[in-house]
Image (cartoon, rainbow, N blue to C red):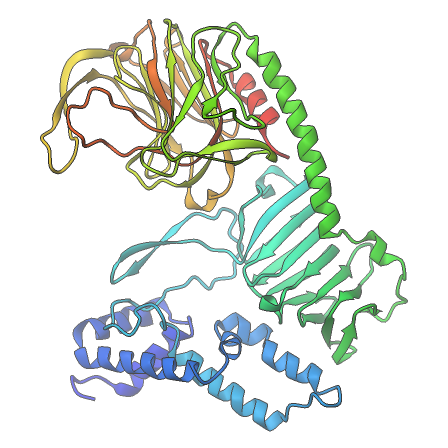
Length: 582
């Protein structure tokens, strides 16, 4: 190979990149070679084309077995199926043929990691610097991965905690909310039931006390707990490690009891393969059960295993009870004389009106405009929320009167912060005393109140029209980061308290103070008002061109509370606790 490039070294680096095992220094080295050598790029593309052709010959499932270093060590579904099949007449796969096929698959896997990213086009991506450290990560914070096309956000995780029911956590630091990603490492709780979806497709229903170690998309170790595992065909080969044994699922449903010194497994549907200790790829089929530690099997243990159908029914029943309790709280709150407006989580909407149930007469009902959608809310089928993912989507209202303080509180499920500013509640004209409450693209909450609209500023309305004159002296109060991409799909409670008398602005996330800032004398205003305003967007009636700033919230809102009072931290926490789905 010309250009003074060591062809063997280049192939080694490409192989490492496809195997997801590049070190940081090797990644930089490969990046530099590809950046400066057209011949190296040609070699890279040749390997892509070779892999594409071979993929048409060999089953994708065999390729998948070698898609990650962890998978090579802990599982090989094709090999497991072959081993289990060889134990039964008429299903024999000669070992020499299997070995040859697996060798070819390994070679293909080393050259095909980047397949499909460019569709045969010239090289445009840098080697993948996928995080492979298995150290437990307490908080899943997005990181950035450099590619030739720019910066891409990445997250760490092998599974999602779909749902918890009456779970007790060892301490607050180890508490995990529903919808959170589970990174490699320990996962433990003291009691209750958790439902975990692994990325490969396997689902575990786990009853505590439980102690697990998440290994990969395809494997988990269980030290304590009762488990029902449901493994669809797409997840065939999923491994549960327990008591020194690998329970290798062949597309089935099975139960495992690792509580109170027990170690026993039973197959409900399908079959599993047992490997390790006293087992030598032994098949366990539907209706069969065995002990993993040579102790006698408790024939009744299946009756104590949590089952997904029963858990989901219990969850539905619990949601009905929680929603009934929530509605009672909302009815009491509706009579609070401090209320300006109360848009609760409703069972359904009549037409396109969002009811305001406050007994005060400051605010009208909300009007749903544009391509808004009513979707399941916090309480799933018990309530609905309003999805405002399209730019023209909004909930419009008008609020009369003057006020001495503000408390804003809402529940939102955010899909993305795709705009620079993303609306929660914005007054139209932003005149003296009017509030703006929104989330910036980086996840920080923003709250502000216009202090002096006679001061002149200029506001950009778009690339094809001149800026328009805006008014206003105001100060924006920012919170710490309140939302990250790891919270997609999670309901979050947000609140902002504007207290001119105490000269304080306090903002909350899930009932906890996230920031507090003093109001400087130049930004104090005692008489507050709202007027025409929008939930989840911004109307901007003062604009004189067709262009408008896009600020619709890409997400769902199913509650908005506005009060003429500065609520205390305890009161904010109470609203959060009542509205939180357990």
